[in-house]
Image (tube, rainbow over all chains, first blue to last red; front, side):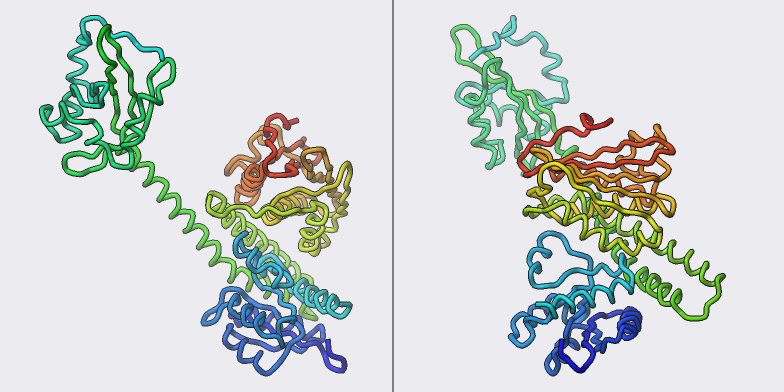
Length: 130
Length: 365
């Protein structure tokens, strides 16, 4: 995390309400929240900014989370930005393909908003230590 | 090779049966040529007797089955009689699936004959395929519906969470929100169960085996359930004993099993309860168990608790999925419980998938 400014979270999620709710909780914790409504918007934002953590939905219109992830990993500037997938951990095949590329999986339906903010905090703390 | 002696009367003991049975009867000589056939075989093949007799049986067999059929005499062991599934091709080109029994018949001074008795199971096979296809469609439908439900359910759940944290709301509103929250949780759980249920019979998602530490996995699952457990004010402990708790297994179904059993314990134990997870490393397997101070399970239900739709909690498939997953991983699941004395659910996971699973019954207490 860069010193002197709040950590920046990029929230990529196609449901407007879920973005609203997540932003409300993350801002309350003091994070700077950027929003993208699909993968294409995320890629546009990532062309000019490097967030501290990315929360990325898997299934989205236009450009999917998987494609965003691939673009991130192919970009040396962004390859090390931690990504938490906003999706339940998929079956073995896809899960294995993406394992190691993501910080973890976050099943929105099962988890609370407090838990989401905790998760962001934990990921940022890990990075600070590392 | 033992040969069945020819019946007396040169095989003509039951001419009426041969002529009138709806099963197919064929006589084939040692060279594979058809010597005789009954009217049922004529009807099925669409050929007249004279068009078949003298021809090689293989002419009427589907090409990919010919080698198998040609090898039947060699494949017959002592005691003779061989049951096979073969496909014939009728005159009109239709495939006919048969359950066939071949009986070698030896007469003194003559080469062995092969008597074929076969039953048409084309219709049954088609019906079975249709049932399977219908099951696939219904599983896909259940999976699609429960998947579609999750997005709006998440909106409801997160809205209620935001509402519950709004400053200045009165105790009555708080109660209403709490009630809605637990209903939303229940709906999400049912949709998760149904999604897992629809997927469990998909044989095409093979497990990915890796070295899994069941203790570390337990903590990971618990971390996700922590907020839920603390809302219920339960004490949760995790204890390990015996040898190390690692197994060559698939962490995804394993964590699904732990989530269900931990979730059930948290949900059905009255607030302020005690939940103990025990992990016991044995020589060839690791036993993972969970005990609670919940209401316990009545004896009548105990035996059926892992059966499909017998689980009275939630969607009725949660524990069924647990058992199926554990069995697919080569292990077993069981429960000990009495009303008023809590429940202990346990699963045995083999140290490696090749190890033979102990039977579920042998573990029942």
